[in-house]
Structure formats: C-alpha cells, structure tokens
Picture: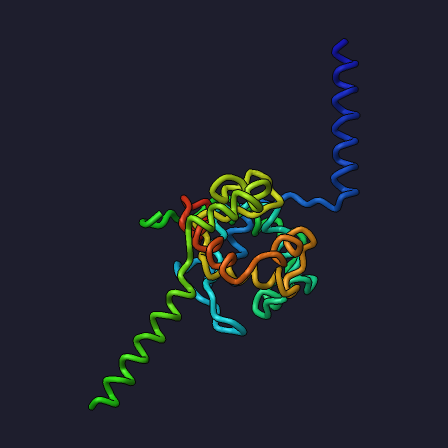
Length: 116
Length: 110
C-alpha cells in the first residue's frame, strides 16, 4: 500500500519535473534577485522617478506586481518586443535565471507610500 | 498696458481650456473600466491573474503611456491592442486617473 503511494508520488514528481524542464521553466529566487537589482533600483526604487528619453513619464511601480507578468515584461524587453531603449539595454544581458530571480524579488512587494 | 492685460487674459483662457480638455473624469473612467478592463485586471485594478498586471495605484502617466502604445501598436499585445484601439484620448486619461486613484497594489521597491 505504502509502496504504491510512494511509487505514485515518485512518478508524479518525475512527470512534473519533466514537464517543467520541457517548458524551460526556471524557478526564481528572491534572495538572489535582491543581489541582482543594481540596474533596477536607480529608477524603480525612487518614488516619482521619471524617464528622460524618448518620452517623459513616471517609471512604473513594480513592487508587488505579479511575478509572471514581470518575467514576461523582461523577456519582451530582451527580445525587443517591448521597445523602451533603457529597458532593452538592461534586459539584453539577463539570463532566464536572472529574469526569474528579479521577478521573484519584485513580486514580494515593496515600500508602502504614505499616501496610499 | 491694455495689450498686456489682453495677452494675460488670453493666456489664462488658453491655459484653462487646455486643463479642462485634459482633466480626467474618474466616474467615466470607472464606468469604462467596469465595462472593459475588469474581467482581466480585477476590481479596482487588483488583478488576481498572474499574467495580467495589477494596475491599482500605478502612476497615471505610465498607465496612459501604456494604453497609447497599445493603441498605436508600439507595444504589441493581441489582447490589449483590441481594447486600446477602441479608446479615445479622453478614455485613456479617464482610465489612467481611475486606476491610479485606487488602493495601491504596486509600490516602489528598493
């Protein structure tokens, strides 16, 4: 009985792992992400910071944003599908693991502002 | 002197007209948000679906820029392109102001 359950669990785990590898999924590590955000915090860590080029608007707040959305955003900057010049330059050298770690870090939530 | 006064008055009138045109209507924004955006981005922009970003408390000028870019095709997303293409400039201002005014779901992070 126990063996059957164990076997089922092992097979399930193996299947899930295979699926994850097939999907190219990497797991984000927020602690590692916190060590990789030197290029991010100069803009995304300052309340009210604005872009200067090619258009002036507020840099988005990303603390607490969905992890999957952040991964997608960085992948799209890396691929050129999203076109902001600074973000393209910053995302270009990031590995899939870097992207996952940064997304995990920012998804954890950020600084609550006094007005909100 | 009279000319100066006239110039000043004209400038004031122009400034008022501009600010009126750009003024966002939160009620209209909420109506449009409920009609179009709610299904994916959630109540008050607090999306519970990981693929769809949270919008509550986001900067209004960033939200407006994103919508303009979806509308123009500068930012490519088949879902958002359809919705944004139907929005007027005023709709975009209203929606951006509405979501920015909702309880914060995103914040800065150091």
